[in-house]
Length: 271
Ligand SMILES: [Zn+2]
Image (cartoon, rainbow, N blue to C red):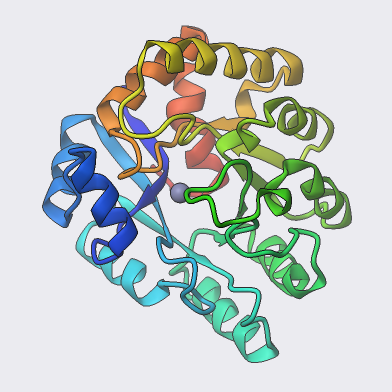
């Protein structure tokens, strides 16, 4: 089966990601990425800003240069809440106009700012205009000094309603607030979710039980297998072991949608 990984980090110089991957023995370099994609038949990967302190459009230069080297990679830049001037909006619009970006991301929780904050609104409008999704970090944060109240998925309801032309993807399905996230996917036609990083490094048996339970609930409650996207959050989790776990959580009849079609459609990858 061809797979699209809708959530991958590729800033190999980022100290936090590099240290974690070294400690957990998840090799993290350009060559390792190539090897992982080849080995697991990952034909497309959404590459996302690793350093959320990078100003708008976060890591756009790095990510777009990586796409030039490997057309399997689809860049998504991030928005920093302190860099939301008209000039910043213009920079992002230029990247969207020239087809260099396939989406944008915000980092509530890592930034102490709610998704509904007015500073982000112009970017939501841009995403609607250029028909690219907005990925919203939701749920637990990597590192205890961040503030997870900003990352609760429920706040996304407000922007989903206010910007009906814009597609929002709840990264991590709001984990552990999976019920709230499932409600947003059920209620709002324009809300999707990725299934990345329900655990860190390599999933153990207890992780497996919980992940299957939570994802089964969200799928059944929403009744929308067309709105869940496979993703890993590599290098925070191993790609191969995570594919195995999510395969167990998703009924086989929905594999093609969740592991390939949904991301291909939402990010307009043309694969
Ligand atoms: Zn991530």
